[in-house]
Length: 164
Image (cartoon, rainbow, N blue to C red):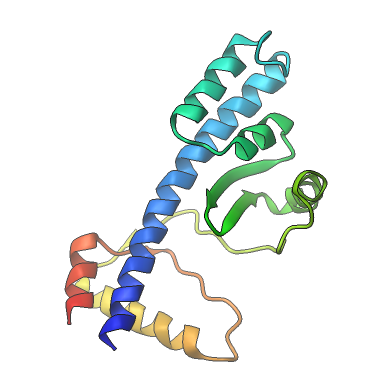
């Protein structure tokens, strides 16, 4: 059971790190998109676009993400890792983004609507323990398709909970 808790701790920490990186990439992608829309789509002829692309490269934003931002198919957020790419967009842009990806990279592994919280809520140790226990039970239930939450647990509280 200790391995399960340690895995959950790593999973939640990695999730927070990925979320921070995704927010940064989203910001960079928005700047690239705005620069491409307000000027020429050629970085050689558009200084703002050139600077936005340099900033994205400095943060190790994948080239595919930069190209996608220039294309402006409606993506709001892009995160990449060894497993692939996760692209977030408004529900009304889902079909256009999926089509743009299919044309560039081939058919996506999946394209589906997911719930994403607008606001996160910090929880104390007691509530975190209860919420994580509930999440674990829901994830184990075969009848549950998806589980979403909008709470944050500090690293210190997570370390306490997973040390037990």
